[in-house]
Image 1 (tube, rainbow, N blue to C red):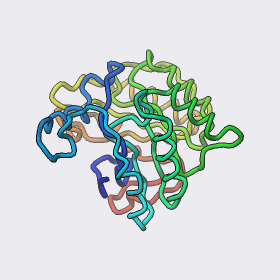
Image 2 (tube, one colour; image 1 turned 90 degrees about the vertical axis):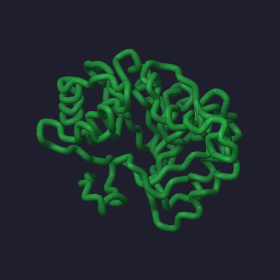
Image 3 (cartoon, rainbow, N blue to C red; image 1 turned 45 degrees about the horizontal axis):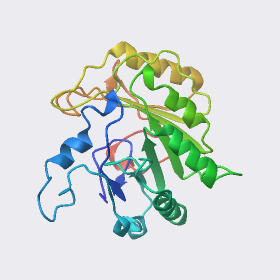
Image 4 (cartoon, rainbow, N blue to C red; image 1 turned 90 degrees about the horizontal axis):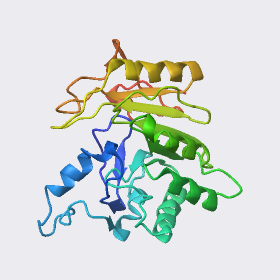
Length: 253
């Protein structure tokens, strides 16, 4: 786990699973894969297996060590709903999140139908607890079916991470969506993002009264283009959260 992170919309990361496989063009320049593969073959390193999928039972109880409440991004280096992750292991991750409920957890997946099915099974007659946020990654209009899957999930907080934004999304059905994050791609092969794509999403969020968070324009490095959209930083959250107050990020309720 990492007690601290450069990701603007969270406080810490927790990786009971690492590694993944690419399934969409949004995965093409995956920062996590690029980082992990640097260490392939280095004996004793957590990523000596590169970005091959690996389960870490020893990490399941790590959130218990953090006494101060944190916003925790779950599996920043993987996808909890990868087909090779057994449901029994996902159960153990959720058991931890439910037990250590002083924290807020952010789960993000591209396997949207699998997440929805899991949540429908686990929370058959209720909603996932409000401190467990469930989100999907969307990179362009071709991936908009993930938003539809997310809306069928029995989650209290549903969010979209539209990053890397690789094309216009057009009209987005934001019914049941609690939060939208948008960002451009970063890294040596970063694909360009267009201002009009971002503004179109921002304006739809404003019309639907959905909190909007703009993470970055991207480029060679995440900070290359800054965070301002037409001169304004957007850092709204779906509920009041002060975990990053020390960084000066505004919060919204």
